Length: 161
Image (cartoon, rainbow, N blue to C red):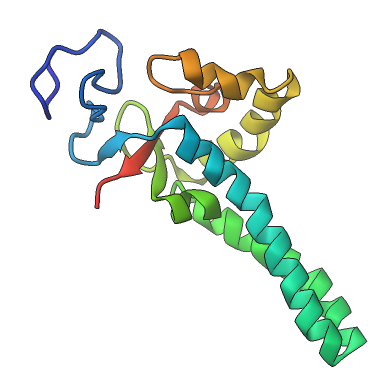
């Protein structure tokens, strides 16, 4: 089989061209996301939540103690709701900032809330539970899939602009 983007031969059972990193099932959708950008996106998710919460609590807490407490309770719930709404689009806040998107590895379509919940919540726990081996698995995997990607049947793309 040849890559639809660069016409070079592709290894069997690969989702990405090993020459141009193009996504084979849906050419033009994007290229394989590198591990550094994926890890940065993973770090952005909790950092963004913590910074946003502390800033909002500080600002509203300086106005009124009760308002600060209210923001301390409601803002994390709002952030979590936003996080869950992004999952339907194959995104997290960090992936959105980094221009990455999770797609189904066979069709290239957005996986939907169920697969994303499985990937982001359950799969990430399993990827991290054995000293993070599930995350490092992506270094050696020909498709760049960590355990949580394999569990959900997804890959991460650097989205074409």
